[in-house]
Length: 88
Image 1 (cartoon, one colour):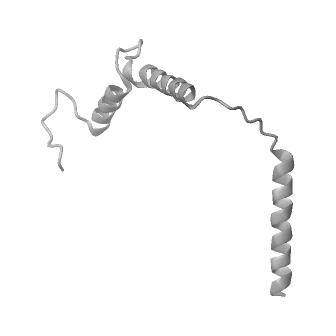
Image 2 (cartoon, rainbow, N blue to C red; image 1 turned 90 degrees about the vertical axis):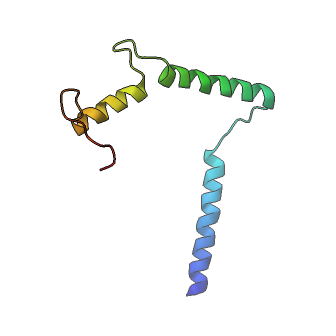
C-alpha cells in the first residue's frame, strides 16, 4: 500500500515535470550584466523619484508627509486642541 502511494507520487511528479516542460516556452536572451544593472537601477531610481521624492501637483505634499498628516488627523491631533504626549 505504501509502495502504491509512492508510485503514484512519483508518477504525479513526472507528470508535473512533463507538463511544466510543455507549458514553459521561455526565451532566454543573453545580456551584458553591466548594462542590465545600469538599466535596472535607472528604472528603479526613476520610479522612486516619481513615486516618493517629487511632491504631488494637487497639494504639494510628498507621500510620507501625506501619511503623517493623515495619521495626525486619525489621532485627533489638531492645532487648536491640547498637547498630547506621543508615548501613551
